[in-house]
Amino acid sequence: MSVVSILCSAVAAYLLGSLDFGIIVSTVFYRKDIRTVGSGNAGMTNILRTFGKGAAAVTLAGDMLKGVGAVLLAKYLFSGLSGVSPMYCAYVAAIGALLGHLFPLYFGFKGGKGVSVAAGTIIGIQPLLVLPLILVFLAVVFFTRIVSLSSIIVAALYPVVTLIYYTVWGDGASNPLVNTLFAAFMGGLVIWMHRSNIARLRAGTEYRFGEKKA
Image (cartoon, rainbow, N blue to C red):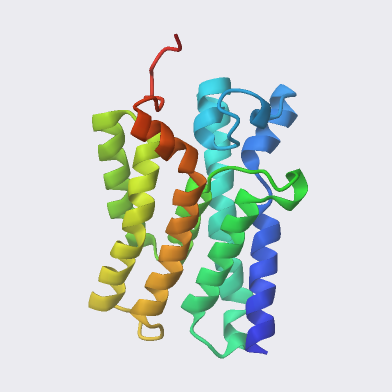
């Protein structure tokens, strides 16, 4: 029963995660697929640069809420049946939602880079972990104006924060090292999806927020 429950959590989360709001907002309201304009990415940053703050806000909210929803749904429906820590079911659902966003079933398996949905899953798993990550994200954006760099740093920091939190406080039902491995896998996925940004960062050509095109 535990294996079936975990698989159900992953599949349900993947299907929910495949609802890529960047693509939905751009095609429904602007009759354009966001993947064909701007940077070609289906994420909130490209939506902001291409269609403005309103569209970006809807995209951000939708992608975060599906991450929260996937985790909470797993906790509610499957953790009681699984015979394992509810935290593990939550992480499996988080990874499922993240994979759905990166490789959406409904949109040809080409989605965004996962930052917004990952943030939503973290809120669903343990809201306290979001606070230091948001502070670091905003600080890096403020000093560098490079959103991708902020995303990469926060993705790398997520397993560190997870290990510290669950080692010091814990939840009484899960192993800090197992939680950290889940977090590292999620962070690694986000970093991997930013590999083209990393190449531009190394070359000094990465876009800075507010920068005008030549």
